[in-house]
Image 1: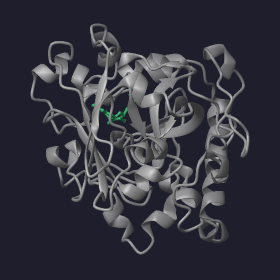
Image 2: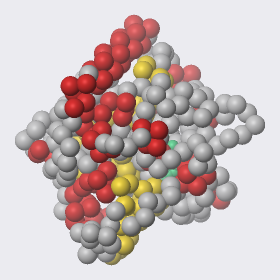
Image 3: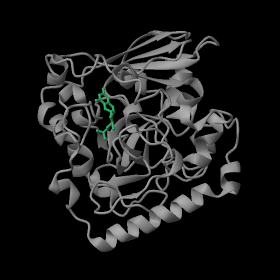
Image 4: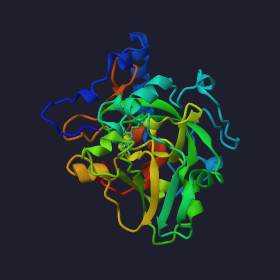
Length: 346
Ligand code: MTE
């Protein structure tokens, strides 16, 4: 994320050569662009848009719509957990995009609690302790309480899922996440009818998080989802990447991933989950409501006030590729927003 400064492009936004030119050649970049265009055509086919099933609701993994978690899980199969980085060789996204390397995923990060530079999180998070960890569940639900991380996760089934990850700053990656569908976690808390949104908060530990010693953002970092977004089978409560526990810089031990939204919705190092009636204000809205909204759905047609969202810089590739509506997940999620003005979804 970019905080407005006198400089037009903060250094934190400039990709280091290491990340930019690490392994791709021009042929690869060209193929990527072609794939992106092909995908754009596919996602924009009106028939496919209408193919999204309204009210698909809280389908479990077994009934999950096409594309979810591909190619790590086929409908009706037990999820295959691949342990370790080497087990991901040859895996691609459902659009046949190659995965970003473990190094890309874990050394080019946004986590302002550790600083605003892309390599600040890996450099400054060594003292952060993600265990032991307690999550407070509160608000309109029948099972409030303070849960130890292990008890919180134990009842649920872990999955590996490959998702596209699109930051509002217009860079992107393809990442194999490990986690539990948030729907399973929400169901276990038994929200009552009064719960219309879920609000999540990041831990506040300035002694371990040097960025929190400065007022870069209003701490704690806060994010929220509407209940149907939280229950959507694509939404993951993430514990790992590449078949391993997530390192601190990726939001250990628990963070959200909502693949059709800009990355800032993916709140890291979560300690609080609260069921509320009112739409929560998230951190970036609090910081700059002119530039950031609640829904933050990826939309190539709605520019950020300071830059276009039409294309994205896939880390590790040379050329920009087209950004897809809802980050390529339109067929799965667009029914959630039927009748809403697309501009309000930003
Ligand atoms: N969560 C917290 N607590 N603090 C942050 O600064 N940055 C967000 C999101 N979650 C952020 C956060 C932004 S802007 C993005 S793009 C993603 O995390 C980046 O996730 P990644 O570093 O794992 O790619």
